[in-house]
Length: 356
Image (tube, rainbow, N blue to C red; front, side, top):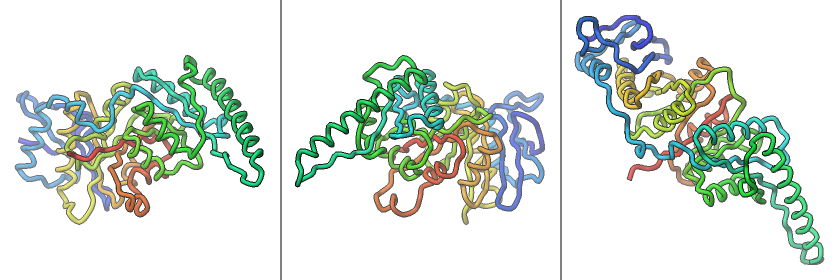
């Protein structure tokens, strides 16, 4: 027997509307029927969704059978960063955005028990003068002086904002900002890259860096009043790498986890949100902790993610990016890149490795 009605925490709720249908699993935990401890209750708020008897059975099974946690290796990117690379641009070492981002990177490295590295990238001004070769040497000496000054400034900044770093953990490079970030991340085998959200860092750049470095990239913004983590998933990958990454952060930071899935398109029927809620609930139960699950129906999944993040005043949004060809990079923007450009809170872009 499957009961559909309105209830409180630990139940399945629903709300319908034009292109904004949502099925909300308030808590992913078992809610037994009174007098029958082995049965689960699936409650849907008015107006009720029309579920078949088979879907009702699936709902009961999802609520009454807690599955073991998924294997950590099912996720693409490392769940516990061992080396965190913070990348700052030249000329912005005194900005409040970079100071807040560095504090956040330092706090994350301590929370995950990792090692923090700070990279400051200066523009490459080296040039060779053919007519006056002696000027090339003068330019090189000036560049060396600026690099030494930048290194001293970065050390001083780290002493006040991220104390305890050794000289080997503070680096200065010359070149293109994100290209140098990729090179250093590859050299260090960094498992998390942190960049401040500021001019010169676009969503496309962040998606490119996450894919090329094969490591999550955190676009750090000032913290919000809330502490919840919103994880966006399309549920296409049975490994659920984005949910794995978000669950690991949620557990380590002791932050509430909200899983968001958007159902839209020509194939989405009236019962699609309910079926998706059942599937998402089954997945949420595998993580071994309470997780709130949201199933929305919006024309644009970006609006569903941003809307839920605003409602929760979420401090972090986790989204995945799949490998893309060079043609894709120069054509349509991915959801991850659009989210980085639109969001007003920190965004963690995690790479999704192709299934072998």
